[in-house]
Image 1 (cartoon, rainbow, N blue to C red):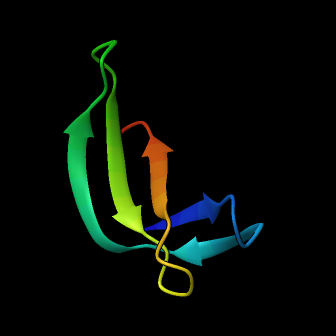
Image 2 (cartoon, helix red, strand yellow; image 1 turned 90 degrees about the horizontal axis):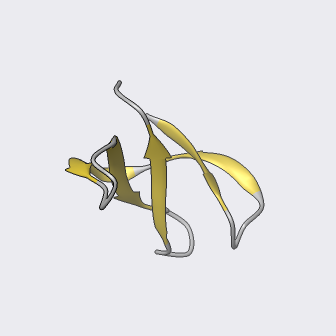
Length: 46
């Protein structure tokens, strides 16, 4: 799944994607940037 990396400022394929639920109850996908290792979030279902 692709997400926007705020540190690299590009769209990248996230590694270790995990389905999570945010505090407000909305679904999201959390992963890491393969280049810099920053956490990446994609809000919404797959």
